[in-house]
Image (cartoon, rainbow, N blue to C red; front, top):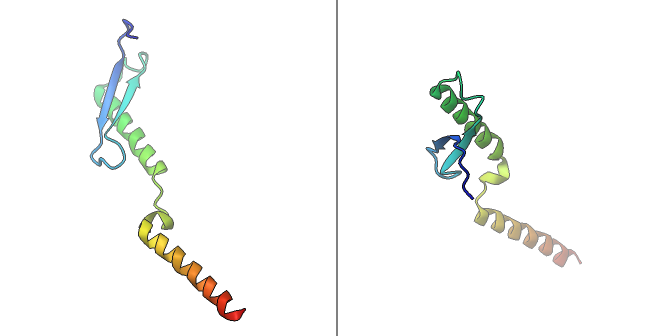
Length: 88
């Protein structure tokens, strides 16, 4: 449903398309007065950067390719099986 209310929107396009294509921010009406458009864009970019930094995990297990993780798990299972097979 479309209403007759207009909102101010800031669209930030991502330079790195792996995470998101664009972010859409709806600016509060009371915040739009007395603030320059550059300040609004900078704030939107800061929020988008903060989101990316907090929601992308760069831990050890995220850097291992899935095939390498599967092969190492299979190798570990084989070693455990071999130990029990030859000891028992």
